[in-house]
Amino acid sequence: MERTVLEVSPGALSDYYDWLKAAASGDVLVYWSGDLQYDRQVVIPENDVLRGHDRLRLATLNILADRILEDAKDGHVLLTQKRLGTNIFEYRATRRRQDFGSAKPKINTDDLVLA
Image (tube, rainbow, N blue to C red; front, side, top):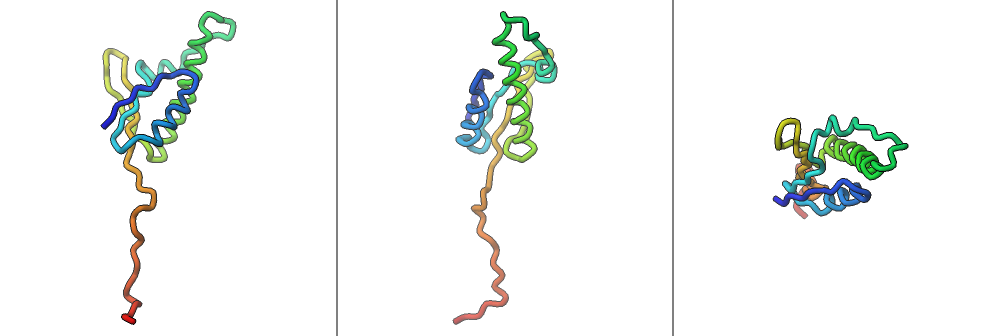
């Protein structure tokens, strides 16, 4: 099992997709540390030019968290949290095992005869 920490910055969504394609079953991606429910609600005014980087980071977090939640609903990842402290968590996506049709179809041999 490999543990990867994703940096939430421009390009994070692409980095997430790269991880998802390359991850083996059981690999863990830490996509946020903090209080996700609270952090996603923070609003930084457009006229606060000194915190433009923070505004971009939060916007990226919202897009990333929405995508990861959708992938969890589709069964690609399992979402968990690890408590680090009071109201501080490590938010994790664990890659689930995928079976893309590698199972052989069952063939009904009842109607077959030897040639």
